[in-house]
Length: 358
Image (cartoon, rainbow, N blue to C red; front, side, top):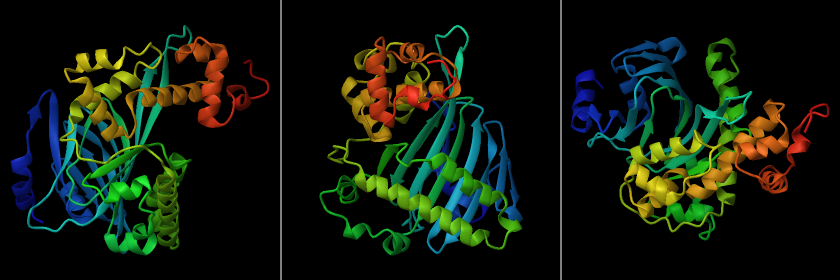
């Protein structure tokens, strides 16, 4: 596709600055078109031999790697830092078919403010998965300074049918209900164990692809293993959701909501009503939109993130566990330990080296 034709599709959807965010659409009909439009976007340098696009413009800095892994299966890996508050959203060229599903694993890096005298900040990772049906409009908001790593698998119906026979699922499974519904996407919190480590291995294979004649086979095996693990855990997920369309999602306000939650995990939660008032959104829409984007309720999300912060503090600091409990909002050491064990199947003390003070 020529650059002029690409702009022809982009222009009607391009709203350069709106409500404090710079908005950037991407053509999402096919993986090939998405890759081509990225290569031809301003500020991009294409290194064809490595299947790598380096990007540095006034809004973002980073790189995208891409590979066709199998017939009907593509993967792009994008590492990006946002220089301004930005919205990235999908658009579709009307005269080009769009039949690929997408499976996205996203890792966001941020810092959490702590109340501890000796440790004022803690690096923190948010990990999300999303499954999107073909032709569905989605958007995501990112704040200035956000560092994100996106693994996006583009999957054709024929590849899914051959490798993940979705048509054989029990109709009572929540994921099957989603497939049969009008809802366009579903998201999950860190649903694949060791996804970061497994994805890093895939990225390493991308980076060294031309140095080993077996890397094509290795990459195919790595990707199939990760996707199989994703679907296995998704099929086991028993979330309660009617999967009915609930109108358009206010992605900007939900992004702001998530930011307020994850950067203030050491502070008492202000409450959903106060949060909604701060975001200028109704309580009911905040709850509905948040669950639609993050796949869980706000309160459960907060508990999950507090436990993720807790395990980082347990593993990577020598802070006493009673103080870690206070740091994530638990005055009772025993209640904190009980919630921690329910989440991770181990007590905090069991994850500490023997010589570390608890």
